[in-house]
Length: 338
Image (cartoon, rainbow, N blue to C red; front, side):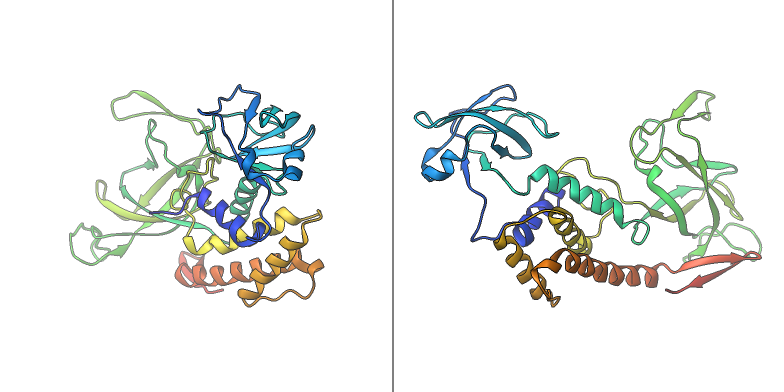
């Protein structure tokens, strides 16, 4: 089962932001039924809180349930209820199941960590990139990637790494069905988004990407007859996640890249702010476990970024070894190892 973005967020908390011996004060919803998105009076389980923790939910305190932040307006300690303003600080009021965890004054809100994960994934390109191989049928002219009613994520394609087919014999330019694959010459074409064209039946169709890069891609072959199958390997940008249920596989992210993302998220979350001593000590310990000791607590953010860069460089070397960069000079292609 593929790791989800939510799993990655949990791992950031577990390995960097929330030491087990210094967890954020929390309780649970005790509504007797789910909390609707419009409810403004919340009943909580007072048995999980000390008197000091319960008093902390007074007016002005921010509390968190899943990814929603709420601002406390008033506290009723007799009935274990708090009146709140829902969906503050850019979060959305939503329904929560009874028994959901309610964090009190979280130093690292989950929505912020999720947004930081998105930022770090976006920042990986172009140093690192996703790779995807697709089966494409060769044609006389250009072949659009995707379908007008099933666009997919072809707008995230950046370039072609290579293409092969079993149906090409360059010695006599005839088609064969031999067992050997041979390289196929093809080029990537960028078209405006939206792009309107007539299909084989003369019906007007439109490609229109509303998320991600605003470009429509097509591929054009040469040196191979039409109607054959070619396997084309593309370099792609990572797809920006939109929900915690998105999987690493669906956005093109290798599982080996998780430590890169986590180190960057931790550095981003602690940047420019005072953080609890327990968190500082915990991050220092985690870096030491990774054989990357921190010289002082003041250098934690820089150490996280340096550790992240070390991991990025290792991943980049692997990518360049597997997919060497190339340049074309007078029609000849040369690979460049880096």
